[in-house]
Length: 334
View 1: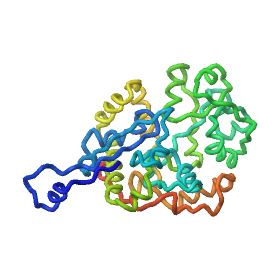
View 2 (view 1 turned 45 degrees about the vertical axis):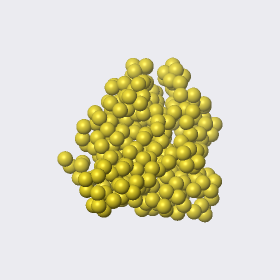
View 3 (view 1 turned 135 degrees about the horizontal axis):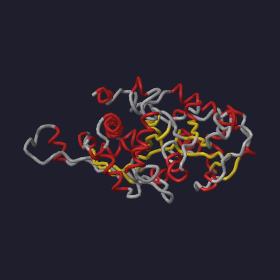
View 4 (view 1 turned 90 degrees about the horizontal axis):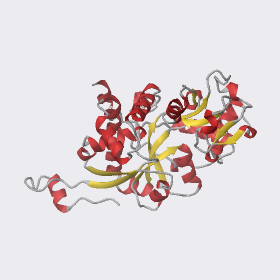
């Protein structure tokens, strides 16, 4: 996938062909976890404002969707970088001997939420214990395990969630899963009321989210390219959050015509208000930060839930080689 620099470009870098053609860019493809949206804003900002080009990269963002499995494409070498969901994916790669690695964590808080109606007695996660909750099948082995351990939820509370708002809107006692930047907006638009939103990250669900993944092969063979992609992506996120987000938002709407200005404004505000990107470890170490301690803490919870063996080799799941460098933090103060 990666286009190597030409001999002429190499000579240029050495000052041999000062009057020659411009330096060739390394071409890489980055797969996202869904259709273009503000949750991908920093990457689009890095494309739109030339941050990737300044790093010597030509980045193609390949949007995800319901029929797209970018993790498989990454493992097959069809794309160079992938947007992961949470640390569960990193652990799954190791458990299944897939040589992929998490190299950065853009979201310090997972935007996973439980949503309830106002004035229905579900104003805390503790209050929802024992009550029906609509969740997707995949959620049974992720955040649901956290809720079982911390709050005593049980599997008999589970009801199917099909990503259709109608069952929730028509039942004031209903509780469902959602994404901080998505379902609450749809509920406000369709239901005409502001729902009660419980952000699981604020309750201790401490997985990193919206990670950057690549192959161990690329890390070992071309760490400079990996570092440039991470650094430029981080700078894109600082620019998106603390500069003018308009360039990224225009590209997002081009890639996803269904994305409205109103939805973008809502999602962008929720990301900033809740410190989804810029909080936790990133406050001291920069966007994209990860620490051994936090990953181990989350892993211990998954072991307690019986999801992974205690002796899983975490050193194969992630590397801190490319993060915690405070890259781009100066952009926040501008």
